[in-house]
Image (cartoon, rainbow over the protein chains, first blue to last red):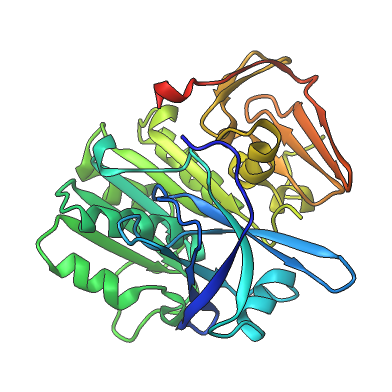
Length: 247
Length: 98
């Protein structure tokens, strides 16, 4: 485990619009260090008068990609850092980051499974790093992903998730939509509840390792629901995100 | 602190993962997977599981069991204040333990 984290200047290699509100920034790092899926980077902006704003963003890419990382950032209204990244940052720009950070909300293939991943909104980002890592190392650990979005257009990584599900890899994906469903949708169309958790988590059995990431209220509800399903507290790892993080 | 209602503090609440950067700066270690025992209720858990309140000049980390304050961090330009009165101990894993 590496000790002290140093700030470094990353260069924006590419920017991809994922959804109307989410963009993925591929950053090239002069001091790249292999991350664990689930970890994040801190991003720091400094104004000309010295004022600084700092936020944490989860790594979306798999650790097997060397020298660069993807950060998928959701645009937050009045968000100091996310609005700068969405509206100002362009390819070739440089930005100050430090990481990878975190060790609690991480999963690697050698930790085993089966894996239950539950995401609300952009909470999919650290879970996507786990899914991509699992695929990159050719793991066949069974995974079930329950992904709650407001509307179909808010689903991040939709095509890639479909492709991964269709390749023989024991990855099953369950979407639920809380505001608007696609035409002819027969899947879930409500907030995550006990019945949904039982249906999605049940087939994984009592040994499942659960990772839950999303807004605080979703994380609380899901964690409590999983305890009711009989999972032990040490089988449930959670990461809450909110409108802002530490400045 | 009344956290039985969905108040503004609750809706802004994060968890120990959100403090991983500043904790690493203080301890020069990855801290969210290290355990801490609450001085109030005796719960021991990984620091990533603590409740984090960051919408203030400082950072407040509370116990998810009893919601008492375990740790306060205040950053000034020339120093960092760390108040650990709410903890009995921190358990720091050796690097060789992974």
